[in-house]
Image 1 (cartoon, rainbow, N blue to C red):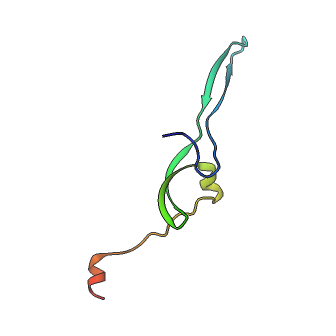
Image 2: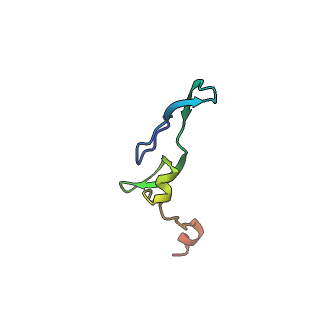
Image 3: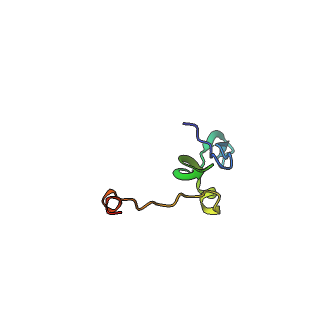
Length: 75
């Protein structure tokens, strides 16, 4: 599983930890990805999206269905 947001394309960032003595060590920052059920092209799928996209409202969540077989038999 690649750590890339399927909405905005956000991926890992690389840089350095810099100490007081100016020693540099490589560091990786990963995006905060969440697996969310979302409506994409009319189909409900689980996708990996960053929390920024969820907060911004770029992810359209599906409507929860209240289907029950017992209620369907009475109709």
